[in-house]
Structures are given as C-alpha cells and as structure tokens.
Image (cartoon, rainbow, N blue to C red):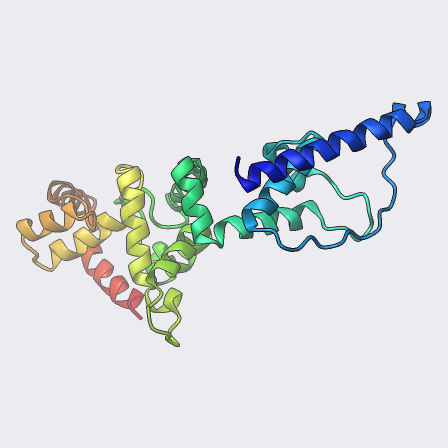
Length: 277
C-alpha cells in the first residue's frame, strides 16, 4: 500500500472515530441540526507532498461535507455569501476561471480528458460572432444587400469602419488582437488596419449570407470592372471572397446603365480613395 493510501486510510479512521464520539455525546438539539460555530485558525500541516495534500482535501471534502468535486465547483461560483465583506460569486468565478485558463498545463490536462473545455468556449464565441455578422448585414452598416437604385453617397464608405466596429465589437476586437504585431509598436492596430478588418468582415458576412451581404464586394467589383480589370482577374478576386463573381458584376453594371446610373462606378472609385485615408 502506498504512503498516499496509508494517509487516506488513517485520516478516514480518525474521522469516523471523531464522528462516532460526537454522536454519542450529542444532545437531541444538536442531533437535529448542525450549528456552525466560529473555529480557531487551524495550524499549518507541514511535510506533505502536493499529492498528499490533494488526497487530504478531497477526503475532508467528502467526509465532512459529503460533496464531490462537482458539488464544490458548482457552489463555489453560485452560493451567495452570507457575510457582509465575503468574496462574491463573481469574484470566486473569476478566480476559478483564472486558475484554469491562465495555467496552460491545467488547460492541456483538462482538454486531454475532455474536449468540452474548448468546445463550450468555442461554441459560445461562434454563436456571438454569427449574431454580429448578421448585424453588419443591416442596411445602415453598409455590408448588406447591394441595391443598384440606392444613392452611393449615402453609404459613407469612409465611416464604414466605425459602423462595422459598432455592429460587431467582439469580432473587431478579435481581429485587432490577431493583428497585433509581435514587436511592440506605437501604432493603433484598429486605426492602422481598419480597411483590412472591414474587408475581412465583408468576406465573412458574404460567405455566411451571399445574397444578403454582397454590397461591398459588388461595389468593389464594379469599381475594378470600370477600371478595366479583366474577367480572369475578377474571377480570382471573387474566388478569394473579395468581390462578387464576374457574371454578377457584369449583370449589375448592365442594370446601372439601364436606370441611368452609369456614372456610379466612377463615384465608387472616388469614395474608395477617400476611405483609404
């Protein structure tokens, strides 16, 4: 029998003897209910390994409280404090989260036991970002459905980055974090690369809803078409999600000509130039 098992067995026998003695001496009132009275600070137990301490804590948790690890974690973050200045549920939840996610080895061990630790977090993030991609598809943001009859001046392309950031704050912050340079820099990533982040948001929104979020890819495609970009090049950009397909661009260009808005591609060109600054 290992030293750890000997320690656990000894602690169990002591706990049972103590419990039996307590029941023998207890009065009817103390048998019917448990009264938690102030206890004197316990003395530190030295000379134990980390594993021995884990065994002791788990033994005490079950023997004295009849709690499993699952019970302890649940009530750690949900049981409201009864004392005025005790740690709140939110503070305990944050401490537990830090104890797990700020220790890489802990995360890896938990992930090797179950993928739930990653799946749950990823599922929540994915759901929230999908909701934000739906929000950027609203007409007032600018990444929604292309309308050939809409006034291009009302789109306000230079301010589109701010509108996208407001509609998709978590996605925007994620992109900012991913684009942070490895070396320390005084550049504001959100400002320096706002055009790139709008383009990424446009690609994601169009991939998720091709017909409802094609405004920016179509505008960019019409601009490049008017500048004389060949069909093959437009097809390459469409494959990357940057523009709409050549067939769609050509069709919309024809619609613009029919409704007398043949000057729109030129206006789009000037607005895109403004957006770069």
